[in-house]
Length: 247
Ligand code: NAP
Image (cartoon, rainbow, N blue to C red; front, side):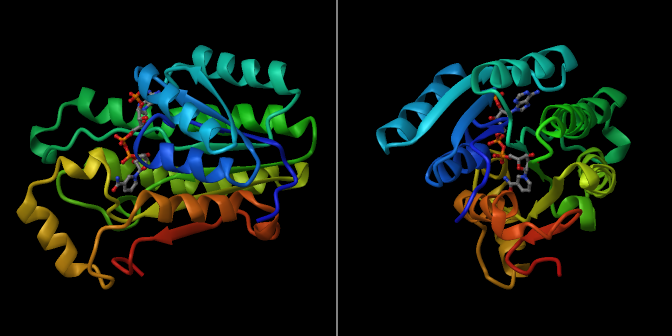
């Protein structure tokens, strides 16, 4: 795959889908900045794996819900590399509960981690990439933002908002040569879905036309495409990677 840019920041790149995205993008010759909040050892392990495979990587700590920390992380990258070519807003959390039992803190924490953090990233990317009039951003959203899910009113609101925000950034930033797209994964095998009860997983799989959970690598390959030159006429798109569960 062809990439005109040189480096990428992956938020929440220390494990799960983010770690797989980091590894995939490194195979295309990009220098990958792996952001983590608390998992320093996990982030360093991914960096070492990328380097052992001949790629280039660095780690950068930041809680991306905190504007000053996220801004500082992007400054670290631009100071080191002279630019930021690509951003993947992947960091995210769940706090599942039925709405009647969900506290305002449960709601706001998820909005902050999944939506506000991505707003900060999209805005700072626009500033950093705008100077070079080049860049591409991919937001990792969710199928739940498209179809809703019981027990996830907070998560659905955060991801539905992320889809709408992606389209708005795409329209604002197009004249500056920056593309914004989102991916809506279905159920992907990670720590997040390992928390689900076995019978819940089986019920989901019964309804997935491809009859399995997806792999993080399958999301990562879609991210690579949306960042690459091969998607140069695609912006404001919400790309489903869900095994046909929602079409
Ligand atoms: P995961 O295994 O729980 O990993 C989450 C990552 O996000 C970790 O690296 C974590 O870092 C980081 N993170 C969380 N809050 C952060 C913060 N405030 N600042 C910086 N990093 C933070 O999750 P995952 O399953 O890979 O999910 C990744 C993304 O895909 C999320 O946006 C999720 O909503 C989305 N998604 C997942 C699925 C799925 O089935 N798994 C489906 C659809 C969408 P630390 O470990 O350092 O805290």
